[in-house]
Length: 158
Image 1 (cartoon, rainbow, N blue to C red):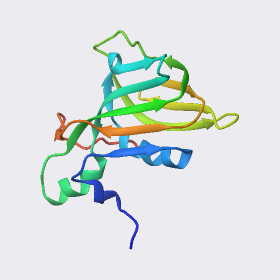
Image 2 (image 1 turned 60 degrees about the vertical axis):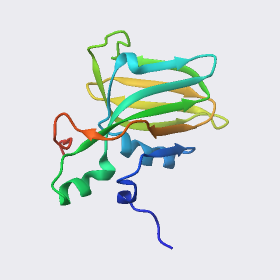
Image 3 (image 1 turned 180 degrees about the horizontal axis):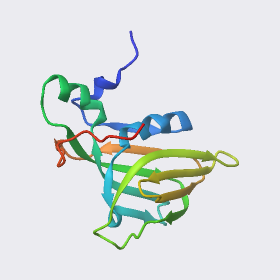
């Protein structure tokens, strides 16, 4: 038996759960360059849940797209953070439906007793800081993949 590879998920919808910082690092790689408008963020205080509806670039499918000479894809995914105590934003206007935010990374800053902060770093100096009692983050694809509107793979300066 061998370990799974990144490409193993290329044709299937993702459903990932992060319960520690290492898991969250893997999940972060899958949502890098995901985009969403501000109104697609929801914090349900009673359920202690924070959710985002993302348009995620399908990094796991890049090799298939390049070897088969087909278009790069995106897919709508839901990112859910459980056990939320507080949500803070910087450089984000949740009421501005024209503002499109882009996720650069998701990290965890440990606090006391298993709690801490899930930090979503956004392009353009924006950030979302979610205080949690315990780390539990789920990423789930909720639509079929579609051709990326830009038809390009996101690039990052080295």
